[in-house]
Length: 238
Length: 114
Image (cartoon, rainbow over all chains, first blue to last red; front, side, top):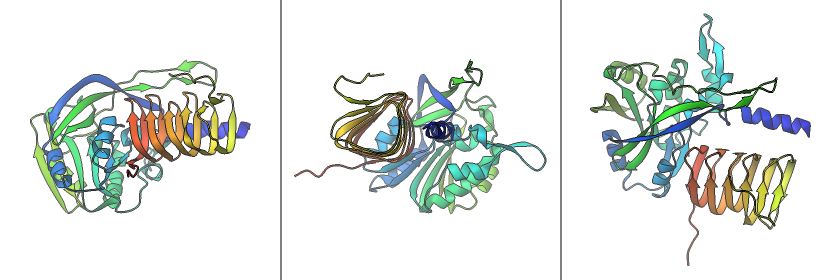
């Protein structure tokens, strides 16, 4: 019995039970999205689409797709990337995240499975060591002709740009909600309870157009939409 | 968090079960279960302390705790804000509270109407 208990605790400390649970600010902003608009037009007459949402679990997004009889997969990769067991070092001794372990535990799907992938702002906030491997995996799980939507900050956005969740509230309309991380309370070996309130995810880099094109070079086509709020929307087709 | 109603079959938070659970009544589960849970025609509630690593088949499923496994509900699935679910969900209706964590698929399967 005790070994079963130990296995349970080990299981729920793993990547399927995130150590850091995102809390949502109550403030939501509405935003028009040209990229989403183009995506919506493409799936208007489609049936039984298979969609992958890589943002925080969004009841709104799940409802949006299931009401239209599509299947939706939810996988919060940013939260998954905070798993302490991913920490390792490279050959030079620099701290990095283990991309192989990350992809062993996340984005595990059959090849050519998805019609649509909603990346949102993932590449801007994901650790450097994970960005290219994740994009490579997304290419393989997208169907030929499948589409991926991603948002990238421009230089004008500034280094302190908060990380947002995105909720689909219309064919070309999103609600943005700032993410604030709160560490879950954990009891240490002495019995003391540890909690810490930390800020949301930090912007890791600003991609220019050339960087974005290089990142998605294996895709068949790429389309840019420049918005007024210092965000570039990118729609790529496998 | 909603407390279990009286008269409901219950698994308390100190109970650990490994194996196949089946029954013909509603079940409130606040302990640890590994295996499979089959409650066709009845409802399963995973309480806030519940830790389930099992496939679940029931009429309705409410999750307040942690569940790893696929859920097949002939009527409805509810994920409360403290829910942490890893697995695929197939059901007729679904309700997800803000704050719930889901890693997996949601597929709505409508019952045939005559």
